[in-house]
Image (cartoon, rainbow, N blue to C red; front, top):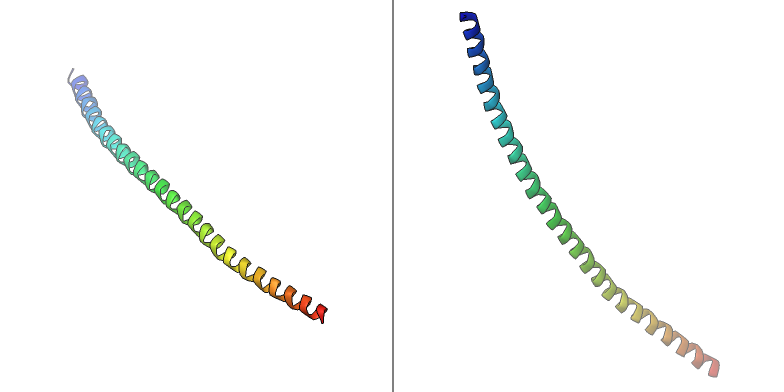
Length: 89
């Protein structure tokens, strides 16, 4: 009977240790899940910022490209005018 009580005590003790470990692991998992959620939100916000910057850069490049194209067209028109004047002579 004493042997049975010792085994029962040992099993109850191991059960309590395992239960405590399980609670610690569940808490650690919950903490990791919270951290993961926060990081996913941060990644999403950073991706949004990146896309906004990319669109802004495209728009600014388009403005610069428009001005550059206007300049090229003006130069071509002046060159055509010079050619027309030289043909008239």
